[in-house]
Length: 321
Image (tube, rainbow, N blue to C red; front, side, top):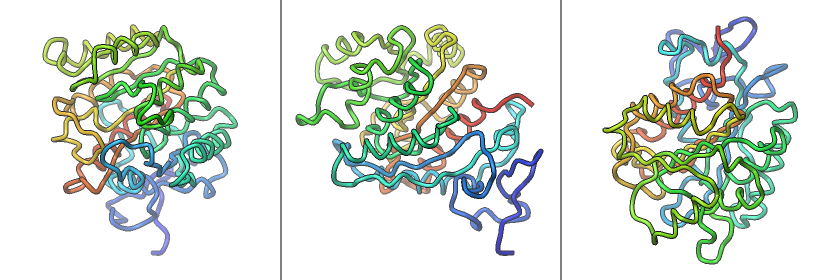
């Protein structure tokens, strides 16, 4: 059998049934889904942005899309907790990778923006696999172009709103400063979740607050629980279109060691997934999962975690049965 038997639901092609076609076989797309050129129409596209020259510590996130796609081979069609088919209620495709410069950051940002603009011509959402967090800036430009000001929901150990790193304006520590300067997101409806660890000084959070971000760390999880996070996030975002950005280092290094700037005290995978599931019903118009650097992984646990976060995002974007 040279071609996998894609599952079919109302004409939409989903992943092959692993009871018939083993997980280690088939296309190297996300969840072994069809490529974008293999279907006549689609609803959500997965696209890789293998870029990591904006990193300030451990490199290797350019290999993140490969790792996340490989970790997605265990995913199945039915989401029992939300009672829906993330791959059946909508046609999800893999659009491959964006050709990013590995030498010139400005060129890479331009390439990512151009590719995302092309993919979202009909305002369809894309989920981008990073890559370091620099990529969020051009992706927010495109989201703003398609939807106007969006609410920005940012899961991360770090605020990523610094002015410069080593005099460079475009790095994985600066995307939300640049986005704020261009007015790409609503300052009244945006939020960082998971912030923790040491800072350069008190001005870090003070400057960030000037961009309108509400900050919720991880240490509060014992006090307010998952439901408390969900309530606060919903209150902050309101009913605006939402762009979701997840840095894998929002997870504790025990659950996601393969990342560029790990910080102790992060969420467990169960806690983060629980928070995401509580956001069902919000209008997500785009998302990214970034900073997976597989050279530091063990037994693919980070790649598998990231792939499952993408699965949860697709479930959030999925229409009801």
